[in-house]
Length: 202
Image (tube, rainbow, N blue to C red; front, side, top):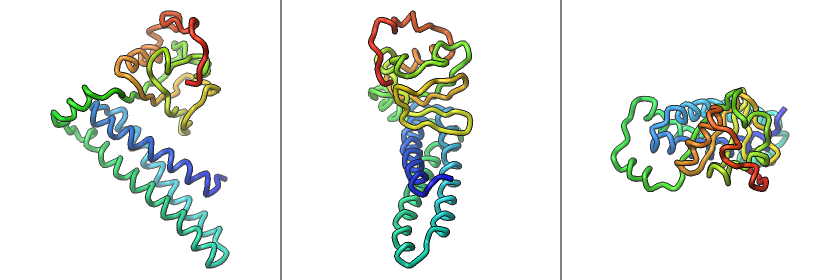
């Protein structure tokens, strides 16, 4: 069973990811990103319930209750952030059309965020992020991976990519297209000259 600390860390990481995803969903009119926000918001609601339950079981004295109250307030704050991110994502799912100012922001933005599904034909499968050196070769940094119903936050060079993994990545607009083609198996690693570069963390 996850500890209260583990749950708080997961809620923190998840709420931060939701903020990135929700703004990107609006800026780039991405329903994929918006749908990920909704999925995460449901997960955070469940985590907040779990932390409340564990706190009630853990409190053995008034002093314990006071200490746990602080943690519960942090959890509530994380859920509030998640709910706000969901409100933003809902705009995209409801067909909200961004104001022209959003297009200006998008054009001037140095970074974008994408959600790609790794297909079985992709050469990303069964390779670590260190082997792939994606940040240098594509300009994209993998910030989280959704695998079935679980998430990997802040994956490192040793993280292995599997078929059907969903990569949430942040980087350049050009790089996002390259990463999509890699994930789809439309281009090979050799075409990018990856073997000519030293390995890195991401």
